[in-house]
Image (tube, rainbow, N blue to C red; front, side, top):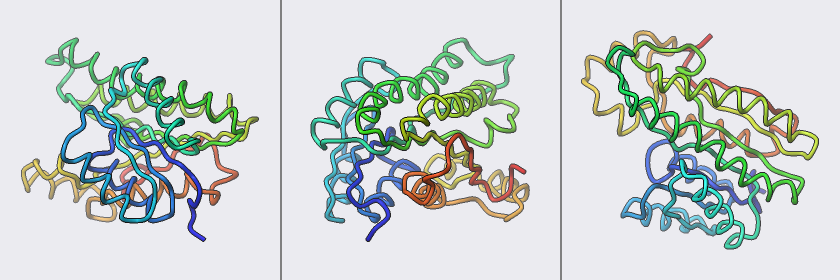
Length: 248
């Protein structure tokens, strides 16, 4: 029997990168996968086909995770289409990096709106479904930057640190109903975004990591499987850093 047989997962921001890796990993473990991104495009349609090839139910939804109304509508549609939601992965996120002296109010607001408010939107909406089921696992994608901070990323760091505080609070609120809430704090993960960085910058990053390399999206996806499955049935309110030792 696979670790996620019979479970339905909803993953935000999943058409590419870490979100896509999580969706594929969940499907290999038998989960039905609903996923969202800001628009329906070729990436979303291709991922639907990749997921269905594993013999699971899969559907992509165009939805703005930072919109409260979109979040409610998304959860309603997924619950209707799949019958239940056992796992929520709040993965949607962006960066708008700059030193504080150069950061605009718009860049601050946008990062907090997409990275942190989206977690409020989706968690508030999905808890209604999970409370009726008396079961659920909520996984919030934070960052080592939310744990340690980073110069030039005060907006991103604040959003990811806020996510950790939110995670611990929701774990306390919903624990008595058998709903768990945990966070993952990835470090330097090699994605399309990081591949745009100059090679010398990536080499310097690797030197600061005890394992001397960047991580892969699959490394984060594996941690998600742990939190999503019954392997972590007695784990809630925790943060796992998937960072090669960057955060100790």
